[in-house]
Every structure is written in C-alpha cells, then in structure tokens.
Length: 162
Ligand code: FES
Ligand code: FES
Image (cartoon, rainbow, N blue to C red; front, top):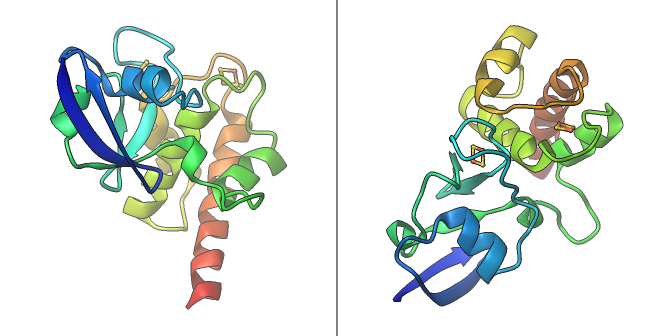
C-alpha cells in the first residue's frame, strides 16, 4: 500500500492505496464519487473523463499515485449547491442524454473543449473534439446542440461575473 493525497472537488483527500489503483477506482471506490463511470477497458469510451489540474483526462488511464498533489474535478464538483453548471443545464435543456451513462464524461470533455477553444463552437468542431466520448443512445445530435448551447452559456456566465 502507498499513501496518496490530492484535492478532489476542492477538498483535500488522502488514502492508502494499492499502487496499481487507477484514478477512476480511487474516485469511485475510495471516495464513493460514482458519477465518474467506467464504460470500457480499452480507454475508448470517455465515460471516465475528469479534470486534472484544469485539463480533461480519461481517469482510467492514470494511476492515482501519479497524481499526488493534483487538483481533480469530477462531475460532482461542477454544480454550486442546487445551481447546475451551464454545461449541465444545456444538456438538460437540449435533451442531450437518454440513459445518462456517457453524460458525466461528455460534460467534463465539453467544458474542456470550451476552455481550450472558446465559446463559439461549430458543429464540425464539436463532433471532432468529442471523438473520444462514445454514446450508445442518442445519435449525438442533441449532444452537439447541448455543447453548442452550453459553450455560449459559459461565455455569458463569465461575462456576467466580470
Ligand atoms: Fe472507457 Fe475510461 S472507462 S475510456
Ligand atoms: Fe446512453 Fe449516452 S445517453 S450512452
């Protein structure tokens, strides 16, 4: 066992883990943050995407021990109390989900896309950037609409806070 500590959704956490523990296992099994999903064992589906130090990563591809001291945000860390993040609102308003299994990873990836590429995203860019996130239900149409709307809403929220 080895000691690992990091900041998850703004809170300091520490645990003794098997050195082979993946970040997604650490989040789900040690911290009970089960909003981060596991949809494959081949690093393809994107259901496990979280933010590490502000960038999206697939949490099934990183060892928890390699993230000593990192700042991690999961889907549980996005809302402020009962107020959803603009990207969460956009998925809800645009029916960007059906079963919801892919949704946490989709939302975490989408926020990262906006952080990297800005608030005015076209459909082609969104589809290309979401290449690493697989949805088996929706046919993607409403997801793309949701990301476009969420990106714009994130811009409006940031402006209002200036
Ligand atoms: Fe599928 Fe991580 S669980 S990419
Ligand atoms: Fe079911 Fe995407 S909503 S997998």
